[in-house]
Length: 60
Image (cartoon, rainbow, N blue to C red; front, top):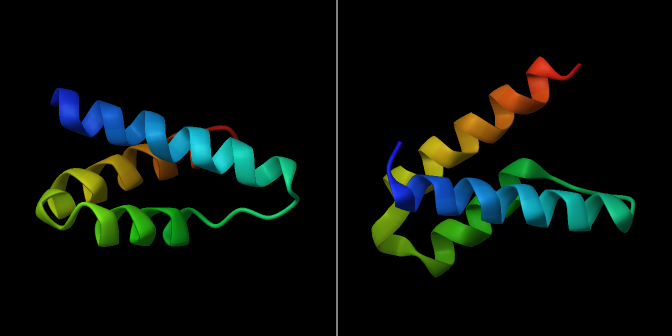
């Protein structure tokens, strides 16, 4: 994984944990917001989304 993907993984995980404190989190919405802010990094954000998703599934 590239440094950019790892940065997005960290950002997604951080936002996910922050949202959980508020009682609601949506992984897809987090990724969508990132893609809106970083339009040139869509591929990296999608890969980061998949990494986080697989980590979450692995913990169930």
